[in-house]
Length: 331
Image (cartoon, rainbow, N blue to C red; front, side, top):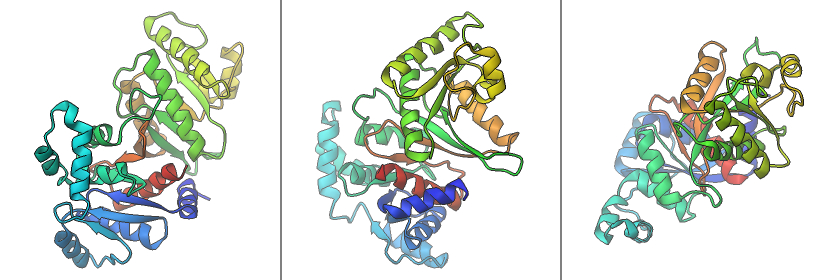
């Protein structure tokens, strides 16, 4: 079974409520109808109700079973405004400013998530990544034990020439530009946790570098080496290789030649890149030259799942992210 089909099946098995901040967007409407009617998730659309219904009518979309929350008319607005003020008053926000900000669909959707009235939140078809992440940080908050929010790309190697097919997580490819050793270890921890939720196999983590097992000396190598030690201390039950070059991370024969005491034996399914340059370039190389399907960036390290779409997304992308967010929420 293709991996995304298995994700959808697992989401159906523990149906969650997902709020979509851009309910007026045609792609979001189409995906919500598909997810709702396919029992993948209970969907809530946020936006101007009359606009949503008019758009749905024009697209022949059945909104049956889907909830609509218009922030300006919602029974929750006052309660959410007060919550926002409590969260942000230390930054100088006034009650009046909170009431105004809670009218914004993205803010309203994340307040719904923070209040427990939804299990996951999705935005980014219209909002920028910066807006989306800022809202999640300010309203949903960072998971206890973590200092920052990172992201991963779910990489599906399921084309005909991928024999055997493989599912991998690449991190961080979207948020933290130049992580220090502690941040890199935290990215590894968060991504290993994400892999445990999504994959059928145990995570095998590779801390990538241009050096393998001491083959080069440089401050950039030292950073990855230190991050590996920190990650191993935090995850004693997880196999972690580092510092390691890509070929030694994913090719068993090369791992045997290059590494004296291999931890994952060239069978990595979680790749931790040393910085955003490498991560972003790496996943796009796999996507463009290797025909891998890339889904994400998917946020991790938040108290509750709040995910980001690309503004160039399709309705299929929204649907897949609904299923993945639901699975995150159920884990």
